[in-house]
Image 1 (tube, rainbow, N blue to C red):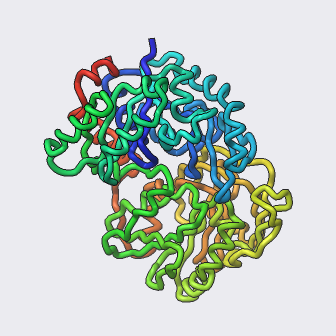
Image 2 (cartoon, rainbow, N blue to C red; image 1 turned 120 degrees about the vertical axis):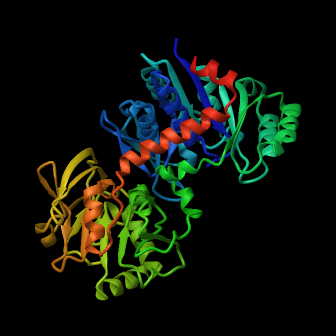
Image 3 (cartoon, helix red, strand yellow; image 1 turned 180 degrees about the horizontal axis):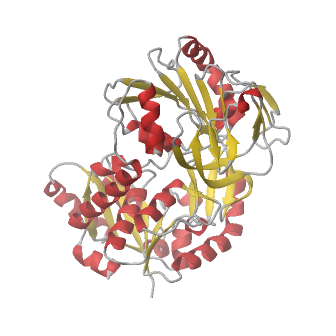
Amino acid sequence: MTRTVMLQGTGSDVGKTVLVAALCRLAANRGLRVRPFKPQNMSNNAAVADDGGEIGRAQWLQSLAARVPSSVHMNPVLLKPQTDTGSQIVVQGKVWGQAKGRDYQKLKPQLLGAVLESFATVRAGTDLVIVEGAGSPAEINLRPGDIANMGFATRANVPVVLVGDIDRGGVIASLVGTHAILDEGDRAMIQGYLINKFRGDVSLFDDGIKAIGGFTGWPCFGVVPWLKAAGRLPAEDSVVLERLTRGSAGALKVAVPVLPRIANFDDLDPLSAEPDVDLVFVRPGEALPSDAALIVLPGSKSTIGDLHDFKRQGWDRDLSAHVRRGGRVIGICGGYQMLGRKVCDPHGLEGLETETEGLSLLDVETEMAPEKTVRNSHARSTEYDAPLVGYEIHLGITRGADCARPSAIIDGRADGAISPDGRVMGTYLHGLFASDAFRAKLLQSFGVSGDSTNYRQSVDAALDDIAAELDAVLDKEWLKRLLG
């Protein structure tokens, strides 16, 4: 019989994703057949599952932790924000529609069937399924029709462990408050709680555990320390960008403008792991640094909207000056589209605006097309003759004179473009910096030796490290019941 547990948080970004990944790796290391599941995710960091279609990048990482192929059923509903009020809806890996927040609340009951169907698929032939909630069950205004937290847990009869983040403060109030406002049926689903991101002497929180138990009656299943190895894992969502600071001064400065609808920014993680690279995330109101050697335009869920914001920030002038000084530019996916002369959206796929001028650093034009490209890809860099492994998730077809100098050959076909002087490059391939040979040759072209670390192996090692840390601090009886 398949065992199940669901981690729900007292709020967003309390560390559920990492804890689910750690539990998946811990279970896999003990020989269990374990799979992750998240009914609903909201993120523009998407991955291409091994069975085709889009899932949240977090569930891709969790499947890696579980040592199983990723599947669209691990994240049956993915919301990809396109505006402040509306999102694209991906169901079981395929685009299902678009909706604004208020309209989506009415659509959720229609999606419950797909969620439960996917959950049954994930459970089949599995010893353990570890489910991740979204946001918090304390958002009781969203409880009617809920498919992300207690609505799913009660319907699928999955016991819940609540996660509180002590690093942000107020963890006692958040746990006790959640207990207070949940209705009796939802409250009964909660078996206990975890305290996450603790720094210092754990015994100092003994009285806190007693207080929480006195108010709620819930047992504590463990106080999890700040998991340093988690910093070596890809970040799930753009909320973490608000906390990112400039890394240690390195020989090579790489600047990344933070776009409102930035997507798949974990493309940059392999560069940030390089000891001789200073990766700088440039926020609105800041100028692109004049001493950057390389500027990377990341992916975007709303190319035209983010292109307008890029210009409002004055970054178009900064970027032109950067190129005139001899600096280099790499655009990935939406960033590649922005580098061209024009972006057209005749079908209104991203909004009401049908055409806008690009940054004109590449002689190409992009037309958004209804059919979405979603695939894992093997490629080769034309510039460095290095193998590339990545994935493509994009709307649009890009054509133009600079496409005669493709940046890569993907599965036998030309991709991307390079400017005549070689300073500006665009590609649709996500994940190119994770390809060690390409990354090393790119850094060598700037006079930086680069780290010889295998990036993918370093991620796998980090998963083992956080699993071992979790094994040492979690309640042994609870682990025994969960893992058998």
